Length: 299
Image (cartoon, rainbow, N blue to C red; front, side):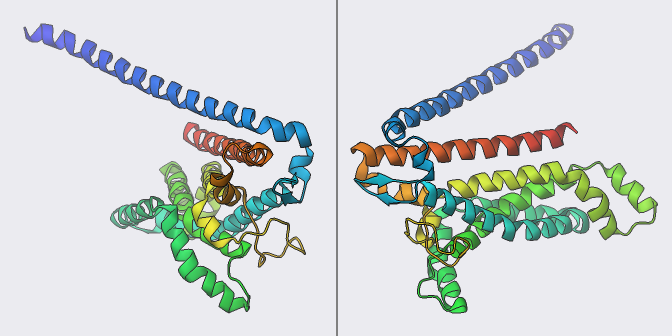
């Protein structure tokens, strides 16, 4: 009897693993179908405005409902806000990731990681309310502005929002570097800081790049928080590098106008074209980020 059970146990475990694989395969297929359906829906809804304006839709700088639609100011706003967030978050994330990975004890590291993962799950609307209540007022007072809802405010708020994600994934990438590298570096007489910055950090760069790209993907798709602090100006600032001007991002534009224009001719089609643009941008960025993380895990 015992022999019979011992022979059948591996078979039952194998059947269970196959069942789990089929479940995951089915879920992946469902997600793929949903993403594909959304993509083709956006293409279908965007067709009228793209047929009317062609590539001029993405190059146009004027957005007047019922007359003309140009997406360039929103593309500019999304790109600049995301770039500002990355410039602010990357040095801080790298410094803190090095400290957590190489200088904290395992118990302290687990506590800090738990707090970071908790912060990463905070809803965007909470960050948006904090941005309206404090951040926009601080920037207004510090720089003597008439209005604190600016590109700089949105960039700072996004940096705060994506910091836990970038920091957690960057620390994971550094911890994934084999311990042998650390032992060899310390054996050659390098200090712990030299070992962390000169040996561990270069080895973890693919994973850190993946972390940054995934953070960018989240930043580009953020709607409510950015909409509350970026302003509502549908044009490129003059001069173009004026980060203390109000602007619009693609998500904030969609959040403000989509509900009141559902199915209404060219206006709705123009908004769907913005949604299609954002969908493709975020999809590509997340794909590159996951490729970087996968390359790290394979190496």
